[in-house]
Figure 1 (cartoon, rainbow, N blue to C red):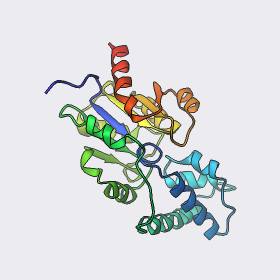
Figure 2: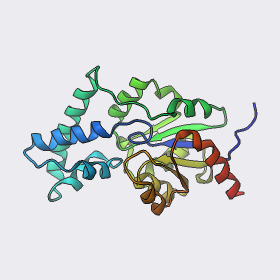
Figure 3: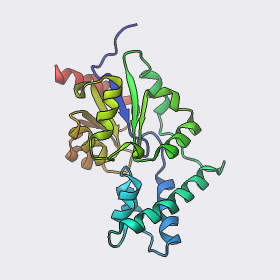
Figure 4: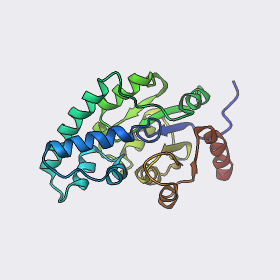
Length: 229
């Protein structure tokens, strides 16, 4: 088998807003959590701006005044709403166009695939099970595994597990938190334009590029590999 046409050997994906169109789910569940606790529901744009952070961090930032104890209370309300929604067979949380085709194209013995997400492990596994994606990834890093984005811990531990160097690793994500995490870990970062943060935000945060469809990713990885030579 020929080697991949790019130098990256570890490709790590965010989930919400990158692989899975979950924006409506997050906004809905956050609204239920706040309303259930007698609080004003944050604007959808404000909620979307926190997607990717650890849930307790996102909620605390949305409170009228930071309150860690209340944030944890709201976390429980959010999770109840989230898993109730996932148990509904009519609930749809589709993959973004081109996701399966991309993962097929990246299926190569010399390429490792990973996930780094702000979801907890239980929530991530439920989403991956629904789409039958878990076997495609070599490791899964979640909010349960230590400091969340934009701290580099998730990427650093993921790289250590597969034996990849920062120069061989690229993070694919839709938020500045993904890009900042990649940069802090010394890795490349590719933004996607269809998620929760605007392309110009991703570029300002340090993304190497922003793609409009997953079909563009391999070409961009080849270009980035040539620039590193």
